Structure formats: C-alpha cells, structure tokens
Amino acid sequence: MPISSDNPSGPDVRSRVPVRYRMHFVERRAPAWQGPLGIVLLLALWQGLAMAGVIPEADLPSPLSIVQAGVALAISGDLWMNTAASLGRIAAGYVLGAATGMVLGLWLGFSRVAERVGLPVAGALYPIPKLAIIPLIILWVGAGEASKVLVIAAEVLFPVLFNTYAGVRNTDPALLRAAVSFGASRRTLVWRVILPASLPTVFAGLRIGAGLSLLVLVAAEMIGAQHGLGAMILQYSSLMLTANVLVGVVVLSALGLLISRGLAWLERRLLPWQAR
Amino acid sequence: MRLVIDGVSKVYRDRRGRETVALEDIHLTVEEHAFIAIVGPSGCGKSTLLSMVAGLTEPTAGEIYFEGVNGDRPRIGMVFQEHALFPWRTVQRNVEFGLEQLGVPKRERAQRAREMISRVGLAGFEDKYPHQLSGGMRQRVGIARAFVVEPELLLMDEPLSALDAQSRLIMQDELVNLWESVRQKTLYVTHNIDEAVALADRVVVLSRRPGRIVRVVDIDIPRAERRSAQAQGALFAHRDAIWQTIRHDAQQALVEG
Picture 1 (cartoon, chains in turn orange, green):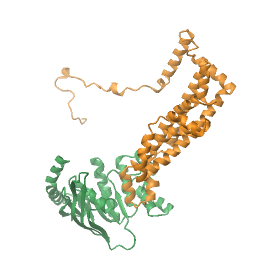
Picture 2 (spheres, chains in turn yellow, brown):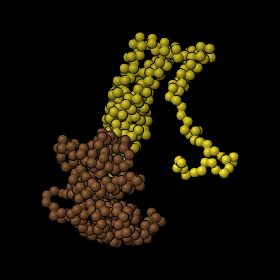
Picture 3 (cartoon, helix red, strand yellow):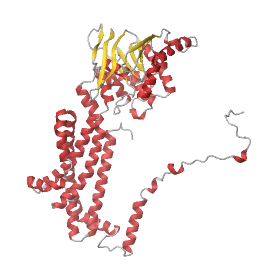
Picture 4 (cartoon, chains in turn red, yellow):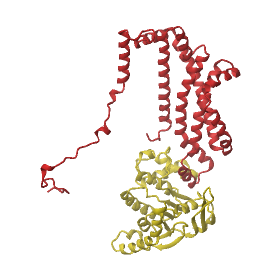
C-alpha cells in the first residue's frame, strides 16, 4: 500500500471543490520572437500610409525613402564624413569627461577635506545645463573642435564623478572589516577592496554619461559646426531634405544603441563577478 | 600564548549625547586550545566584544592583549555572519586573501588555498564567484579563508546563523572536525544555545545592556561524545542553565529591539 497522508476516496466525492491554479496571470511570458514585432509592424504601417498617400513624403518620408537617401549619402561619402566627425568628438569628450570625473570622484571619496570642500562645489555645478555655457566655452577656446569636446566632457563628468564618489563611500563596511581582520594595509584596502567594490557604481555613472554625451553632441553640433551628425541634420532640414534628416536621426539612434551595448559588453567582461 | 581581555568596556554615545553601555568590565582569558562560546540575547554586545579582539572596534576602557607572544602580532582568522566574501574574487582568490596579507609566495598560497577548499568540501568550485554559490557554500568559503592562515586565534561571529536549520547542523559537525584538526584557541559568538553547547569547552553568558558576564558554564563532555544518548542529560542541564540565565533579558530584547 502506498504511504499517504490523506484519504482520496473520502466520504462525499460529489461535494468536492478542486483547487485551481490561479497564478497564470502573474506568470505569463511572451516568447522571444515577439521582440522585433513592434518595430516591424510600425515600419510596415508607416510604409503603407506613405504609399497610400496619407502621409506626405515631404513631411515624413517613408522608411524605404530613408533607406534610399541613406544609401545615396553613404555613396557620396557625406554620411561617413559626418559620422566620423561626431564619433571623434564624442570619443574625445567622453573619455576626457569620464576620466576627469573618475579622478575627482576618487579624490572626493578618499579625502575628507576634498569631500567637505569639493562636494558642495560639484553639487552647485552639476545642475547647470552644460549647453548654457557653450557660448562661454566658445569664448574661451574658440568655436573649433575643442569647444564641442569640452562641453561633452563637462556633461559626462558629473554623473561619473558622483557615482565614483558614491561607490567609494558606500563600500560595504563588512568587506572592509573582513580585509582588516586579515591584516590588510591601507594600500590594500584602497586597491584591493574599495576600488573593485565601487566599480559597479562607476559603471552606472558611465552609462548615464554615455546617454547624456549623445544629447550634448548633437546640440553642440547644431549650435556651430561644419561637420557632424547634428550639423548634417540641421543643414538638410534647412534644405527641406527630410529623408536626409531622418538618415541622420537613424544613425544617431544606432550610435546610441551601439554605445550602450558596448558599455554593457565591457561591463560583463570587466566585472564577471556581478550577479545578474 | 593566551589572549587576555582585561576589564574591557564599550560605551556608545549617540548624537544627543545619550550613552548606551554595550559592554561593562569584561574579564576573560582564552588559553591555548580553548574553544569559548559567547552567548547572549540580542543587544548584549557579544559581537562588539569579538570586534574589539580583532582590532575592528576600539574599547572605551580596558585592555586586550596577547600574553607569551614571541615575535609578530598573532595571526587571526575571522569568520563573519554574512560571509563578507569579496564578490569580485573567486573562491580560490577569496581563500588566498589572508595568505596574501601574510606575504605567502604565490605558488604556496595557491596550493594551501586549494587544499583548504577541498577540506571544506568545495573542490571543483575554485573558480566560482560568491554569487554563484549557495549560502552554506559561501560560509564554507568564509571558514576556509579563516582556517587557511593557520590562525593562532580564531574568531567566529555567528558563522552559522544565516543558514537554514539543517545546513546548520551539518556545518556544526564539519566545524567540529575542522577545529579538532587545528585545536587553536577560539572565540565563538552565537545567540544559539544549542550551538554553543555542542561546540564549546566553555560557554560565557552575557547579560544585556550593559553586557556583563553573568555566568560561565564549562562543558566537560568530549565533543565527540556529545551526540550520544548518555550525554543528553548533562547537556540538557547545561542548556537549561544557560537559558534560565538569559531568558529574562531575551524577553526584554524582544520588546525593546
């Protein structure tokens, strides 16, 4: 006889009320192939409306026109030149801003004096929209490449600074205690405990900075630049070449996606120990 | 060599200047090979005491010192309640940490860590990160990290209390075996009376706020025999004596937090 703690053939089977599984709603999952569906449907709808003449081509070119315009711009070399100019600026500005932000963040994190004195300063400078000081920057360094690089750097600097600082200061005290209990020196604490412990927070700052850098890049290029995606968009829009404008927009979207994916990849490579 | 805790007190002062006496006038000597458990209700300052012995908290009064030391600061191995493993280090590198601080050469370090990892039953997990391990496995790493330095003083701060009841029983046995192979003087903090009585030679009972030593119970049954039926009567008497001592304080702790 099987061992059982209940009695299935109970006295009154007719009055039985079965327990139904009631969590389907919560546990519903959508299959992965549905992922691109939204984009595909949107593009199809857009193309259909354009072809039916509902959307005038001059106001909003159809996806196929944008692709055609993109191919033409790529062949003429226009697209590469402008994309390269933007990439150069964003790379230089981002690296400069992120590096400065990390160094200052570490300084604020490690020095009590720097923290006391520097934190209010950083707090006051952070909320200034960096675009507002572009005229000043142009006054200082001229309207050339340096002005764009600097404004991007200024925008990236603060989120990286604050996150680096927070990472250092929020190092799990339990880890510090553990390290000290095994005789760790101050140097070991800094390099082997505090820095690795703050890396995830630093990366969060780098991600925020990356998003902001793209925004400031385009704005700065629209304010005054010969080349670059922002300049290209402005130029074509004044010529009413909306398809070309949208090529610029699509490249920016791709660029943003590439940067955030790249950072995510880098984070996985550099911090394989993080629980995900 | 022995450890002497000589008239140690710890007073915490909050922002308004109100004082909380966490520990008051603690005298305790830990002789060579002694396994001492410190038991008390929450808020009795038992973890603070351990923390002071490790040099992680400064006593308000009194002194803690080692007697009969020849040479350097004695090696300390400490096990923490919430593991306190370095999440960016693999199991292997976590266990090596203490050896690194002692300046043990790389090759010997790796070798000793591997042996210790294998002794705590984690062979094959050397390259895993802490977040890939279960709670029990993490604490084995924490124990390995402490034992691998061949500590002259072992400090364990509620090492098993983050584990479920069954894992805890298993780890208790493993800890006894591991400890028997080194037999180094040990301070073991726990709120679990059963655990204290199962592991220690001597149980020091602390009261709550201020934390004072209110009772010292010697468990003179050999550790290996504590699971036997004959030992249960004596063990029960010990457990009951300890419980009766702290019962009132524990009730108080439940109300006041």
